[in-house]
Length: 72
Image 1 (spheres, one colour):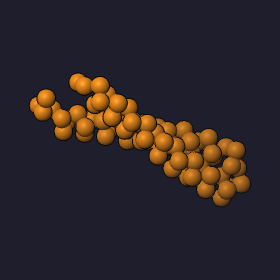
Image 2 (image 1 turned 90 degrees about the vertical axis):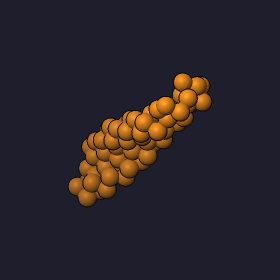
Image 3 (image 1 turned 180 degrees about the horizontal axis):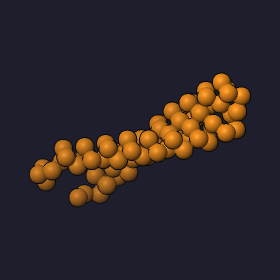
């Protein structure tokens, strides 16, 4: 595996994490505002978003491996 492919995988994982964090904070803030408890729901949304972001990043990494098999 070349160095360039390793860097692309790292970028895919971090972009999934960043998107997940943003979505999680938005959802946590919305639920927190609706329940008048932003201090509780923002960290919950952030942690849920990080989990989903890592899952999305891992899933796209898997798809990238499938596309490059046998093309060396």
